[in-house]
Amino acid sequence: MKEDQLNHVTLGNMADKYGPIFSLRFGSHKTLVVSSWEMVKECFSGTNDKLFSNRPCSLAFKHLFYGTESYGFSPYGKYWRELRKISIHKLLSKHQLEKFKHLHVSEVDNSFKRLYELCRNKQGGSTASVRMDDWFAYLTFCVIGRTVCGFQSTEVTGDASTQEKYKLAMDEAFRLMAMFSVSDVVPWLGWIDRLTGLTGKMKKCGKKLDEVVGIAVEDHRQKKLKISGNTTGAHMENEQEDFIDILLSIMEQSQIPGNNPEITVKSFVLDMLMGGTDTTKLVMTWTLSLLLNHPDVLDKAREEVDTHFRKKKKNIPHNPLVVDAANLVYIQAIVKESMRLYPGTTIVERVSSDDCEIGGFHVSAGTRLWINIWKMQRDSRVWKDPLVFRPERFLSNDKEMVDVKGQHYELIPFGAGRRICPGVSFSLDVLHLVLPRLILEFDIKVPQGGIDMSARPGFFNSKVVPLDVPITPRKLEAASVSPVRHMTCKIQKGGSPMYQVDYIVDVSHCLYQN
Image 1 (tube, helix red, strand yellow):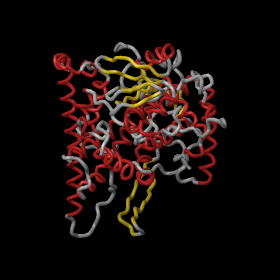
Image 2: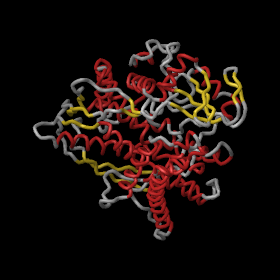
Image 3: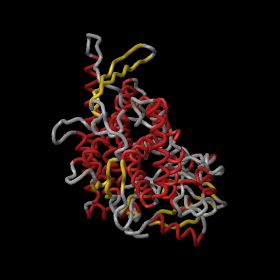
């Protein structure tokens, strides 16, 4: 296993030779490699799920994510369970996500406006060559940043705004996470990472992330003080609670666990921002790449989306672009099939907290567990023609009910068990909001030579070659109304109005107006 090789492919080849479960020595760590859904189910069922509920904390996560203070890498126990409870019930519940949906729609609208402007500014016509992976990154950062921190893509606060500083630090963090750390393999050789400067770079980047997240938290704290000190009884308009507001309210009630609630809040914010941005962007990038390489699938998807749009435009003419993903079964199948072939993370890591037995083999405490999701989701015993991109497989009777939320072990792109990614529903909501609209509003052409599907080595499953493709707005209907609309939204709690939000919406970029 080398830095320039795809570890999941190497481990997959070893599984072909040694079977779906085998052990190896990775530096100082005894490691169990699992590549079948049966073994994964055994790992994440019953008492074994609890025993494999810890994650190894790498050098990058130690210095970039507050180490074991963070929700993502804290050891299983009371502290982690309390954080999980906050995450599931206060931040990422179905009810809470529904409250945030209009913010998601607003940021997606702004991102599509930017895409239209890229086409409009192209000299000689409306077609432009666009780095779609960069646009997906921009979109997901805007949506998640708005939900977590209240960042607004239309906000201009100077050349060095908080969100711009954070975006730069986040990009640097992702770059450092992809670098090989000697101490992750042989801990007592950590001096090599210090000698090469890797440790110092990670500490410096971690300090930048802490600084910008700290500024965002303090800004929210001052805003809350301003509101609470408002003796007139008036509320600030055009404001809605985001994740930081909710966390600060919980903190005020002394319900934030841990010895340092301030660090806990900041680590929560950082986990949400970093964890959601890159994986969602990657899934959208791989999905569009697959569609462009399979024009027949893209045509079927467009037919479904166009039909849905015409029907919704007739019944709900004021906002036909907000699609109902529940009715787009083929789009859902495309997303599942894309995540089956190209999950955002190819290997899930855990570490056993006690002795246990998996597949008839004794596993000692402290053993690393590597679940090769990439290999498992291409198992020919489970999937007919496993290397073929065929969304129709999820429309058949035997696979129709298979989802990605950790209950069907043959398809677990977000993981499974107690430590499954808590943002599954959040990520799917964004995917189902963006993909149909992109297919509906734009013609995207395949560049000469097709789309290169090579993957880059690293923690995340990213593409080697950027997704740079020519796109053109689809001219299905001509605009015949004013490009500015006024809408009013009243936010209520318990039947009583709390505040009113007035929106001035510029729809001049949209070619699908009624």
